[in-house]
Amino acid sequence: MRRLLLAAAVAAAALPGLALAQAPAAQPPLRCAVDGTFAPHAFPSLQGGVQGFQIDLFREVARRMGREIVIDSASFSGLIPAMNAGRYDFLCAPTTVTPERAQSLLFTEGYLWTELQFGIRRGTPPIRSEEDLRGKTISVNKGTPYEQWVTRNAERLNLTLLAFDTQPDAVQAVIQGRAYANLSGNTVVRFSASRTPQYVADFVLPGTRLHWGTPFRQDSGALRNQVEDVIVCMKRDGTIARLSERWFGNAPGPDQAERVEFPGYGVPGLPGYDATPQNPTCG
Image (cartoon, rainbow, N blue to C red; front, side, top):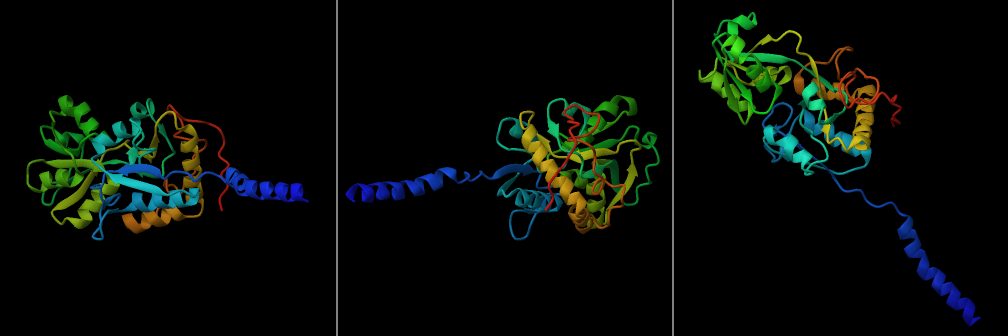
């Protein structure tokens, strides 16, 4: 009888340890970052922290993955180096997927289209072609495709680049007359114009429509695919379209990236694309 009682006591003592060993380990919070001055995608909230389309989007992505998320705010020019150094798992900032970036990063498919658009000071004659920019000073946010476009075309059009750490500073340069025009993404230019009477959304550069996707390090393919599966589910149930309407002011049509599901993982035709068919389990 004593032996049986001892055996029972040993078994009972072992059970909590066995249960603990079988329980799944808690996953650490996801870590990402945004440019917290890039309204309406991410900008300061009166309650503290940052708000905007990106914040709502990736908090919902993390919720559906069953993960906590920590979103830092920093200058865009330092975000990709910080991610590559291991500080972040991915970037919550809207990041234009270019062939150059796709050589060294993994991207999800686009959840928004971006096009390069100029903003000008109210009263300035509208820009009708690139020739109207000849000899002018163009303001941009540092480390962006907008800066790259001005740099590539500086000699051809005799452009002067004026680069800033934040988009609001680039807009102010136009209002103050230090720059003729500001070049940025279409959503940002339209939002700035809606909030700043002296600033007007103007010329869209033809042929500049690109994916705005989520970048990861090249060793993070599994996480990239998990996040993209969630983004696809959010397209299917209309969540991204509703967030777009809330923050950008109009409901996206059926041909907009908020609704379009692209085949495979990543941006078709660019490095890092994985043609494996998506098959997300959407709740």
